[in-house]
Length: 366
Ligand SMILES: Cc1cc2nc3c(=O)[nH]c(=O)nc-3n(C[C@H](O)[C@H](O)[C@H](O)COP(=O)(O)OP(=O)(O)OC[C@H]3O[C@@H](n4cnc5c(N)ncnc54)[C@H](O)[C@@H]3O)c2cc1C
Image 1 (cartoon, rainbow, N blue to C red):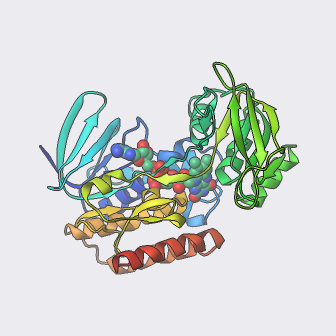
Image 2: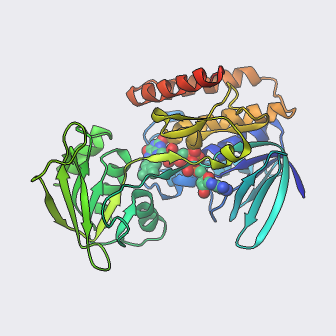
Image 3: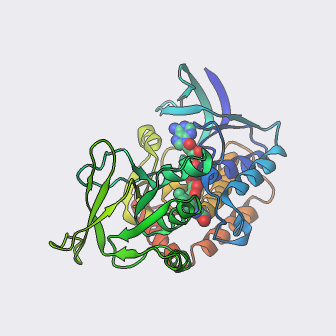
């Protein structure tokens, strides 16, 4: 069995920032990432980021990964990175099991762990939702922006949040016609600046609408949609049909954190944080000692918040195993301030309501 000081599970923005701050404090860090490349969601984000200047607003997501990897180069002797390696188990005795590629299975015993595994896309239930041609928005983004593959010719986007709007725009940039964007909510969830841009390009955004069914023999040929009432129930006689070969489902993300549940961390369902999330203290330590968590795996937010959470979890986990920098409190307070700033808008306030419930849950605070 291999021993390690601090293992970070996930090489997205939260995991990479945790690695930077933990290594800066002096800890020996092992980052484990299941993909071939680091950066998590950022690797497919060709758009310029919103958020705050400190977290690279106006920089493209793909370029933020390069910036973070550059920072890590300063700590070459402190940070080891394993890619194509998936953590498949976290056990009561503190051992974690990993699978490298397809057949190299082994165990690691770290002093502390930070779980930064991100989130996964929610699906939508309707007849024939498994026809080829029906994708999650993240999958479409990966196809186009990572592999250079056009997913089809005419798409119906389901979901008018920021991801649905941004991916619609990217589809048009790739030469795919967007027939319409629909959303069951009565209002557009994403930023109006994105929605206006899409509307100016002639794409209708239909609020209070949902998918009734998908139609096709071997693959998607048609989507049937309908209006919904204020209780999200379909309204008879309002059906419309779209001839499309792609349907893109963008109805939100859910924290990916089964490893924490497996390890025995206390979890709580918090709708504002998009699912089950770990109860954490002010140092982002879960209810299991020396198990920390940061980023979307603790509540779906944005890369900006994931990065700051990562930095904070990194210095706190390093401190817990003996690497306490002189300016520990000062740095921690600065990260808390940055998070408060990022969460000061209307979406952030919604997130804060969720975080408050975690406080109540564990008698601890985040
Ligand atoms: C279309 C789109 C547009 C967005 N635009 C913006 C924006 O403009 N501004 C902004 O701030 N945010 C934006 N976001 C949100 C942002 O991308 C996420 O909030 C951010 O990536 C979360 O970071 P994370 O490190 O927590 O998770 P992720 O980026 O998801 O990284 C998690 C990593 O963990 C790895 N992993 C998971 N499980 C395991 C395991 N068992 N073993 C090993 N590795 C594992 C994954 O492969 C992944 O690399 C956008 C998201 C999308 C989808």
